[in-house]
Image 1 (cartoon, rainbow, N blue to C red):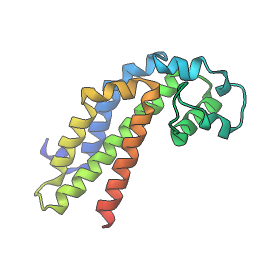
Image 2: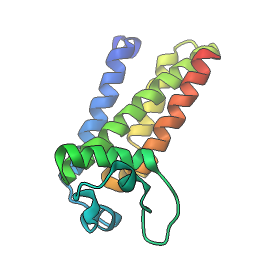
Image 3: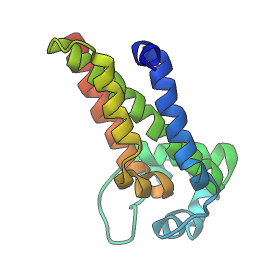
Image 4: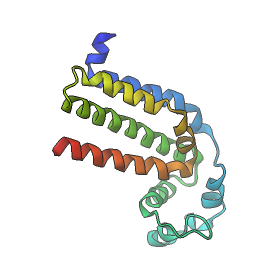
Length: 166
């Protein structure tokens, strides 16, 4: 067991496999809640409008927030695969696993900077807590939860770049 903890690639792989196993059932869910309003009930995703038109539409009627990068991932997904819940959930699971890996590397880098003896233990613990946290179920298993997953991706990526190259 100690050898696994000392091998950072193997430890990370174990955490990622655990995350994939935990969220595997979500791949077979259908669209729910706002997914239906935003994707299923809106024909413009399937009518071949310009990309700008599709990413610039309000998320929900009466809202004014603008999330072009997240919508761009949906546009690419729907253009490549059609409107398939399995693909939407697989993309969200991929973002969760990316976030888990980013947190692993960020924690290892931070622990190393503050002179902890075994930074991989901290990285493993943080990434395990993250990937098994029940708070992430909704954003991962709900297609529109990609908004939260992607903001987390960019926060973790920005933090890692800052810490690594400061």
